Length: 154
Image 1 (cartoon, helix red, strand yellow):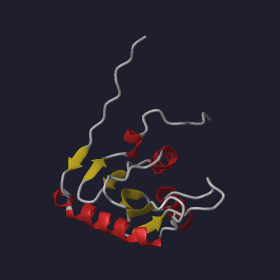
Image 2 (cartoon, helix red, strand yellow):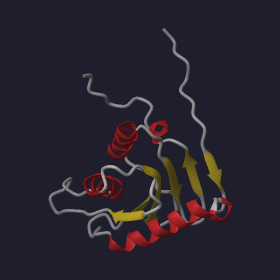
Image 3 (spheres, one colour):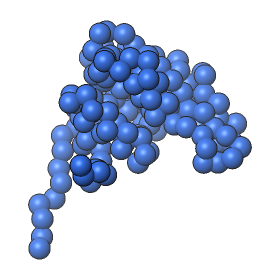
């Protein structure tokens, strides 16, 4: 049986100047977070920044290990830290940046699942801003990045 194709809305900003101020500031924080990445093996430094419901911003970066795949992506490092430190505060938006920054930085499959898990747990969507050198793609809810999510039935 044929099913309807999955569609979702996204916004592409050809220049970061097209982003709302709050999103552009979050992208800047994600870019700064790239400096704390430990990526001697891939050379791909990723920074993530979240804006929380109480207005605070938190950042994290990817951390690699010699015993690949034991490293951790910036997105999961950040979401797990926020959940551990501030379980009652929800994540409103996440920005991603990378060095080198030529292409826009998109989350891997594991990070997409954790973003969705976070949305489900907090019962609130997370705006995701995936930035490049001077462009960004934005989705209003992380669930749109992974239409067939893993769910444990209870």
